[in-house]
Image (cartoon, rainbow, N blue to C red; front, side, top):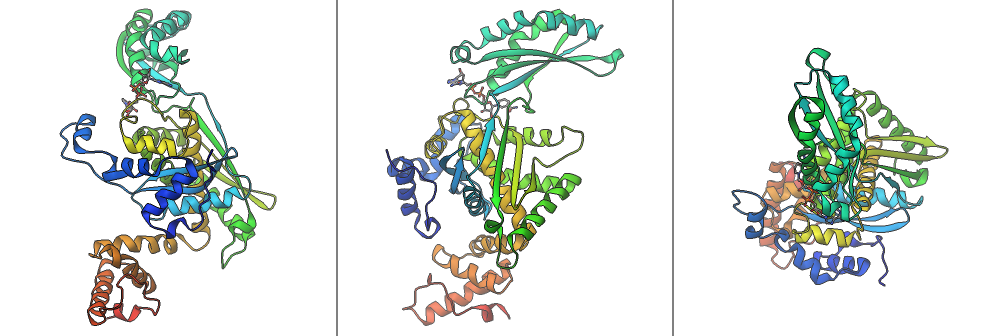
Length: 450
Ligand code: NAD
């Protein structure tokens, strides 16, 4: 067996094809398969035409991998699809700090999803609820008959819960059918079950069938991630590790006390989670909906993760719902999604949920550490500068140099990038022997200052 590692020093410095070779070596996936699955985003227009309606083409996004991730003592190279600069680098850096203290510890609930059946026009809601609870075995059997394939794989209906909503004069009933979806995200399976049992539920409740659909607040399918980071690993040039821990704990308290901050704190988590969810072909709207509904479950919007001091170290804890699949939907049809599961060596939907959440907690750590130390803009804008350089019309060979110039001038704007580009091109014409892509380490700020 190959050496499975998520530590690939110098990875960011080598070419794209060299990176593919290194990931192939580290994960056992064939480098040619990696190239083929990522060619043109992995999806051609005619395949895309089978996915959705009115297709004109496909839309590309960068596909990177986060390194250094270790989850429950296993190394993972984790694919991330994201357009925002610095997300992949930040997740890799955070994972490196965490692995020095043993990596992420993850616990994943069984893959239980909730199907909701709404019953309206209920004259006596408490009596209706009793009748449904009394018929639980019958309802579960009816549900299982609707999804024989799932039951054959060890999944199926597990519970029936009844909730009475609204005022007695105008009550409605929400019946929850709890289904073990095994390795599927489960939306279609759940909807099939909800439709199969709805008429019988309405009959038992002497009411009328309303909606029949899964709930994206899948709070029985949560994942919990813990990590520790030693103070030394958190230190920066200007701050010692203990001061950084204090800053991060302070940032956590801010999010716990203020929904305005909590929203942005959680966005930092979703930077990592969504990128993994998209790379593996999963439904990120479903994960987002579940995450934010869970964050607000107490009646106030709260952070999904908290950070505390434990002795001389920092401890992080994240809990959130995570409905992901490794089968079903369109994910098996998308070559890049299949590739992602292979690269990260994903064995089941629960395994994937744990890895995605670990990357989420790592992304959160990177963001709160940056906020508690240099501020987010220093690192972020340096990477953002490349996008600005591209927007200003820089060719691939010019991007790094233009980005370096506008960062040094502390003026990361389109105008500044255009001036830098013009200056480079003038110099290249004057000195044709000089390679345009060689970074100009003599400093180029003067070109930007007029
Ligand atoms: P699906 O409809 O493809 O069902 C999964 C299939 O895989 C079933 O036929 C099942 O029997 C089979 N299967 C094979 N091996 C399995 C295993 N090991 N474990 C479990 N099932 C196995 O997919 P789904 O997961 O039911 O639905 C997911 C899709 O539904 C996503 O594309 C999602 O975007 C979409 N969707 C989402 C919502 C929502 O979130 N509100 C609503 C509707 C649809």
